[in-house]
Length: 432
Image 1 (spheres, rainbow, N blue to C red):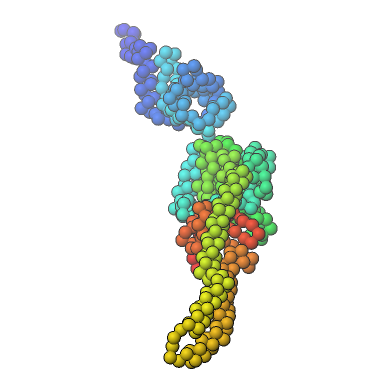
Image 2 (cartoon, rainbow, N blue to C red; image 1 turned 120 degrees about the horizontal axis):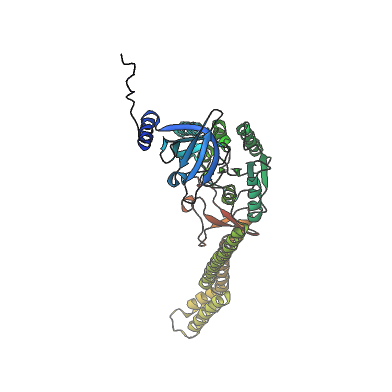
């Protein structure tokens, strides 16, 4: 009896073939795969490829992220950072190592936050809170500027520096709030409500509010994606400029605010025009108003000259009547008429009445001249201005006589009794 057992018919693999077979099995069983773990040993090669390991308390796996995928990262990965990656699991045949080829990476939790962001964005957009029609224009010349930010934040310093340089005469009122952390959203709501109370009770003239914070991760800016904060922004009695994060950062507050600024500094610049711009505009308006007033006075002077020429001088009128009287006297003396005596009496009566006629005619003409002068005086614009009225002109000197000829943002010049006031149309003109 043969005690020998038959040889095992197990397949003998070549190393490379086995690696490829394992890689195929992993691909069909796991890929694509998402993994969460802590970065360890992160390095970026000269080629732009990134190599690191993902680990947790029970294991680790080697990872490679090639240049194309690494160029799409919106943050710089660091050792010890908790991340979520998506990619394909395989075998690096040259060493026979299990390897995860990473195609995308984000900080852990960011995916869930982004989904919450999208859901809230869809909800508020459906309510019309993002509609441009609802949003208001910024004031051309605010009396005061409110700011909601953290007193310790760099954003507050940037805003104050910008406003002090551009409009040092405009008061800036800070309503301090936490801009990061668990209770920061409610803190921002309270800060905004405090400014609203000042506005509604006329305790402080505030015509625009800046909601600002510097850059950071999605988690850092998450308080600006709060629904209650969005509704509070919509309730604002004055326009709100939202300047949160960097130019590439977007929050729900950006969408509901009247104006979005790419940075806190840009928000401060949008809130006001530099003082030198207003000085130049005032000088231009003053010159145009002076030119328009001089043209008006010249036209009135020409009308007075024309009326004076029509009435003439009283002395010339008297001389004309005296000439008529002289001619009548000559006819009386030398004329040959049948009723010489009767004509003589008629002429004598005319001679007696002529001074009265002349005086009456002169009085009538003086009265007409006085009335004309009175009407001219009443046309003097300075008399109307002394009664509290103002004369409005456009930048071309043309008088404003109808709301149809002006529009929001248009510069105008108001002439008063003792000076001129440049102004800007703050809103759309209303008809009675």
